[in-house]
Length: 125
Image (cartoon, rainbow, N blue to C red; front, side, top):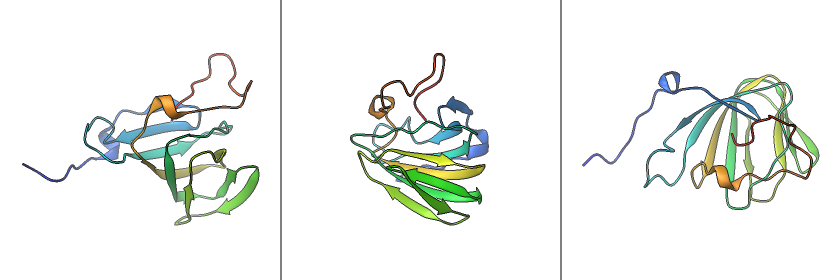
């Protein structure tokens, strides 16, 4: 039995989300303790938070900010930010990010402040 899984992000289907476009690796593995997402940030991502998930954002390309509980934290390539449960966050700026959610991605663990979602807007990333 193999004790590893390999993914090519370029071969994963792009998924539109409230943060932009993402490609999600390892979400289909029942025993995966985490997942990895290649995220291309949109112009107007929504601030959100998680109750169970810690996320690690690693900036691969571009510069901008990660808004963390209202604080605009500047980031550039190879900046890494660990976002703990309950911290409202969003990436701001044209960037490509590796996002590592622990535990793995769960659509049910996305929360938005009342009125944050616009009609027809996608929620989970």
